[in-house]
Image (cartoon, rainbow, N blue to C red):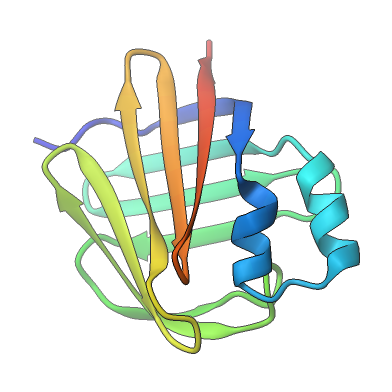
Length: 135
């Protein structure tokens, strides 16, 4: 049974984010702003339907998907690209593969205790973020 991701999560650490953004060719001005942010995650998880809202003072990004179903993801709020995205459960980890212009792009979410972990990957760059569940 997959882990329950429901909840509001506040970022507590963010490692190697600028290198990840460089790998995506995000311009330097946006990279500098993005690295200063500490976005929250608001996740609604109901069976195979998941909504992940990434919330910050600069930009918000909403991802609404069914686990196991490929869809076109519009990343215009992130790096101005579109890709074909598939998200699946691998054990207790939610794994995203994004096929498009950038190779090896995707992410993995998992929970340990009251912490939500996110590993972002693109073109060999890896960013690790940790969020703490709010009550």
